[in-house]
Image (cartoon, rainbow, N blue to C red; front, side, top):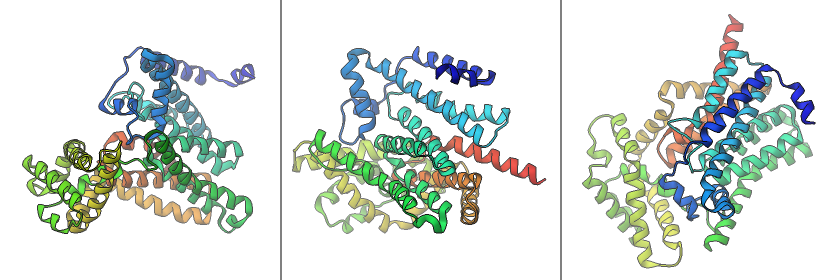
Length: 427
């Protein structure tokens, strides 16, 4: 079987595999990079999703002291396999010429190198990037060929992806939507209903799995208690001390007052920053950890710990308080919040015009998919929806940094190639 596969390889494959081999050994010889997040995975903190925690802790249990080197080896190898598979699949599907194939390879392998360095980072991005590539590739293949093998690989990789990074919980819903558009009136057939149900079932499966994991490890059946700790950061930045009168819960009010006074003393409120919304967002973007992790999260845990010292309860209650505060503070400062939210959203695209272009593409190819869901139409609509959904989620839950947005870069590049090809053909 292996000999048969090797016979199918051409010179380009041998060159590509050689480059990937050199890259692999290069990263293996580099030291693992530890960040503050790395230790939270090793401690299996309640705020961390189980995917990377189980990966690291499993290696630590088996290999003891050398687990971090093994982790770099495995996650680099996994990423490179996913990159190779993705490159070959999309090159074949869209019959990409040599130059686009080379550029696509560079876009795919870019996250492994600075500034992201996900291959050597002892953080979840390395695994989640590989899961994302495998999941999206098999998702597109399934939409095209509807093979059971591709559906199974999509299901496994996307479940693993969401259990590693929860920001991708919308991915199976998007693919379910594309599947729905493709079949139109035939969607009511038994087979199609079951497949559509499977797509929509994935978020439920991952949610229950996450909660079950925390019940077993932390004795609490809860989702990751860190979503609104991040999401409250922008509403807190746009708030004012007078908002405290609208907060009925005394504990929530105390957390808010302590937090806003602290960042006010450092001039980290939007009202204290001079200039336009771009300048105000820049201050928020650059000081996100000071407003969030080192401020409201710390103060919330301290206040709740005084009230209930049960294991992990102070973290869970801090998440609940931040969820309550998020709604109140957005409502009271809606104009400023929305202005900074969309400024942050556009920041992730580097230009409002790129964002509007993607929205326009999504509308155009949505209409085209209703009429005829071809491979190209389905792919471009899927890509635009993945780009938009991820950026909207990231802008709400955090700040628009490359670390959260790089996953879709290769899809955007393929869309550009397809559009340029279409433009050239039209001319």
